[in-house]
Figure 1 (cartoon, rainbow, N blue to C red):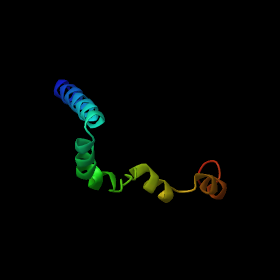
Figure 2 (figure 1 turned 180 degrees about the vertical axis):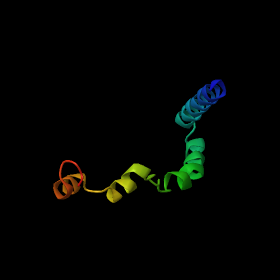
Figure 3 (figure 1 turned 60 degrees about the vertical axis):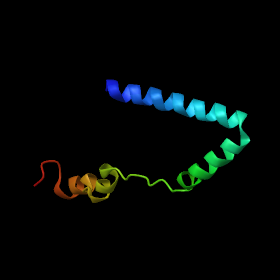
Length: 73
């Protein structure tokens, strides 16, 4: 966990540095945009949680209760 926080802190500072340099240097900003453009255009896939897929396969407990009665006979 400690290493993750250090890495997040480092990456945050790196992004701030890149942003500051892009503000000062338009040529750098253009090159950076060209470098990052393929990443920005990729689509993000949404992970389907297992519970969403499994919810469709659940039995209808209300129908079963109506059919079997209170004691499941």
